[in-house]
Length: 269
Figure 1 (cartoon, rainbow, N blue to C red):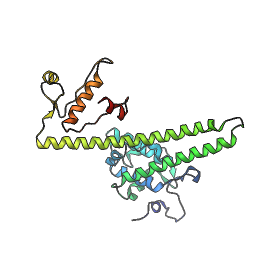
Figure 2: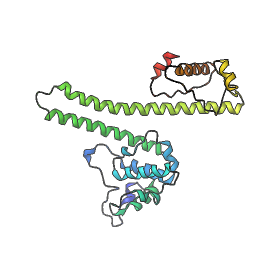
Figure 3: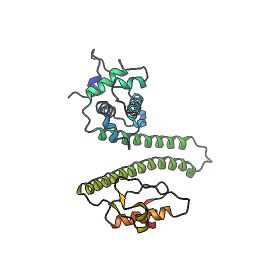
Figure 4: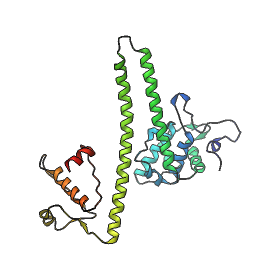
């Protein structure tokens, strides 16, 4: 198979970029990975679903790649197909080297090494994005250290650095937690599917018989139960009783909360 870069050589043999090349000052870049990912998505739109939980359009180093990814996201989210023809309407009228944007998309598809490794390409692109962010933080730190007035304390300069680093760290932790949540969700779905195939149990019992009588039976698989009440009426406490009861019975449980940490939930149980 020809290299991705070779697919963008003009017929005259003159040297040409695969896309407007980011300068070396922007940090580590892998344009081939960006092209391979976009080509995979344009070939198989389902490839986007495998990476949306961590991949973002601004992770691309090349602006036209960012625009391409956003166009594909928009079309696929609307239930439409994303291919070299349909994304054209969302892209700027510009030339990439000596070819049009549409021709560039066609070559992305024809030169793509396949769709099986789309997640790996996305992971590499994301990692390089965070490395570029760290380089930018270091450059800003050096610039501020050189230009700051003498009466500015070093600890004050470090506050800005700490804030920037914490921002990157929080993004990485969020992605890690989302990955863990998705993996847990997959495990839960698999366990419930397995129980359903076996024919037992029909549902998960309630911790209180009075509740079972009100709803006429256990919590049935596939149903959504909503608990409504005013603040401080025990909704969280009751929910955690249900969770603990389900866990004691051997059922997997996934807890999604926006105001409590995992340790806080465990302490309440």
